[in-house]
Length: 228
Image 1: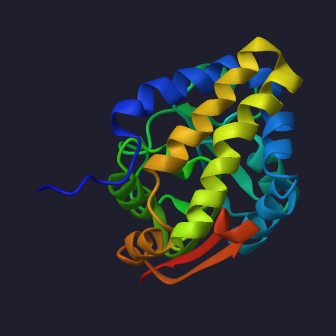
Image 2: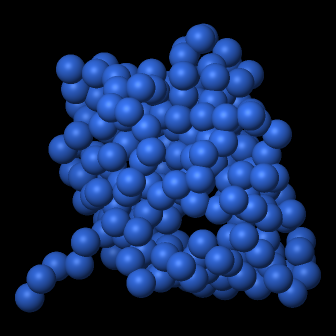
C-alpha cells in the first residue's frame, strides 16, 4: 500500500477558496483561534530568519501580516501567494502569484524565507519544501510558525477537538456567516504530518532544524538553516 504524501492534495482547492472568502476577518479571527499566540510566534520566526538588508520570501503571504514584521526588521519582503485576492489586500509592491510547488524564482535568489500559518496548506508538502530550499542561498535561514500535530495520540486528539469546534464558532462571531469557512482549518490539521515527521522532511533540505512546540504541541515555530 502506497503511503500518502503530506499535503492537502484533493482538499487544496477547497481550502484556497475558503481562505479567499474570509480575507477581511483573516488577521483578527486567526489571532483569536490561536489564543493570541500567533503574535509572538510570528515575531520569533521573523527574528530568527531576517537580517537588515536581506531579501526575504514570505511564503503564503496572504494579506502581508508576516511581511510587515519582515519590513520592521529591515528586510525586503517578496510576497508569494496563490490567491490574487489575498495579495491585493496587502500594501507591498513585490507581490507574486504562484504555488509553493513551482516557485517562479531563480535558484538561491533569497537571503532567507518566512511563512506564517501557511506551509501546511501546500498541495504537496515535500515538493514545497524542496522548492523553497532551492530558492534560498546556501547558509540562508527559513523560519515559520504553524499549527502542529503532536506525536502523542492523546494530545493530537485534544488539539483536533479544539480545531473541530472552535474555528467555525470564532469565525462566525468575527465575520458572520462566511466565517464558518474557518472550519477548513480542521481539514488542514487532519492532513498535516505529525511534528516529528515534519522535522524529518525539513532535515532532508536543511541542517540544524529545530521545532519548538507550544500549546500541547498544537502550535510550532520551526527554525532551519540551509546546507552549504
